[in-house]
Image (cartoon, rainbow, N blue to C red; front, side, top):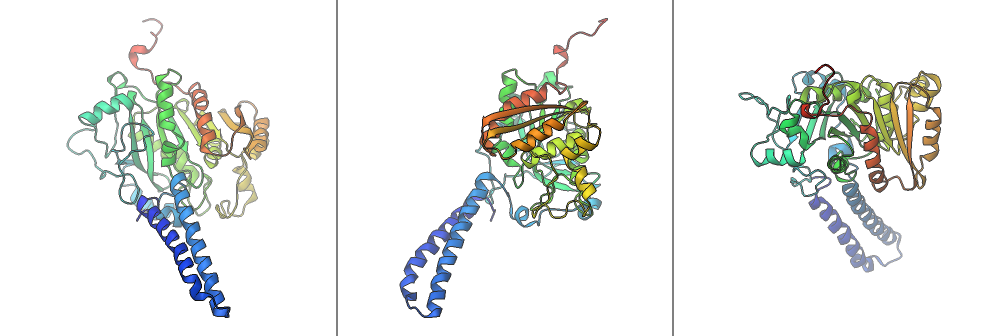
Length: 425
């Protein structure tokens, strides 16, 4: 029974309603003022209130996709590098586990299993015949007949599992959006820029598709001629849920920073037809993902040339959700603080766009401080709304301008027929 399945939500709602009805029905039976009867009445109230709260939390979690599964909630699905490092060498870096998600980006009518997860396809490795010409390697992707025509028209959203070569971390239920141009003959030999998109914490990766509306927004901007086509790799910011890893290489723990900054780009470059130079890679995220986007760009300028931080923060967080991320070392915590890095280390040659709101966003002061610290060769830009909260409604409003800003800094995917003639030809 899935954590986000409709059946489980309905069951919890029914149990909560039934508990309230049972409390009303049983109340007269415990009307005595004897201590045992008073305790029984208090127990009935506590049980009904707890079940009502649980039903509300289950509904809210399903709506906002904080945790997508029981393992994510309780930590059973997170794997440290030691647990998977031996298996990693024998696996494909990326395996497509769901290619029937529907061609329309951002659609909500997708096939689901009884547990509410997207219906997967069994992993498949091309053995006798080569993969489709538009892919370097993509085990599990089947585009034949009508599926191929749909992909050429509106692109494709794929569910993937990524295995880190350096860290051994295995991240499941992430997504890739391949634009329609990826499948069109004119672009058959073109490599596409990549935007790595990161969730907030806690979150389910599908929220980038469903609530941030990233694939649909990108597709509409491309259709309007405002940006070029790109491959979008959408990932959960935390690799060890329910722990918040803050994109940090945790001493004797998950090497989240290396996974996102090195393993993921390497896996994508080996699997899809994408650019490998830093000018072809950008990173974007919201909330915790915004902190991580700016952090990855600043710490790995050889991989990312631009970053967008939607309502991010810029100091190294440490609280009950993170645990001891820094091994008790204040120096290592400082190294993970973007403000500290700008104040004490040479600035990296990257461009960062930060967003916030004058009213309704708690991170405004921190965002302005970060902007003030930026100096050459780093370039900082801001998108500040007059009003907007820390929520998807605000980030959706900021996303189109953020993508337009991003694509002014990435090398575009241009088919040979549209390239300007070279001197001497």
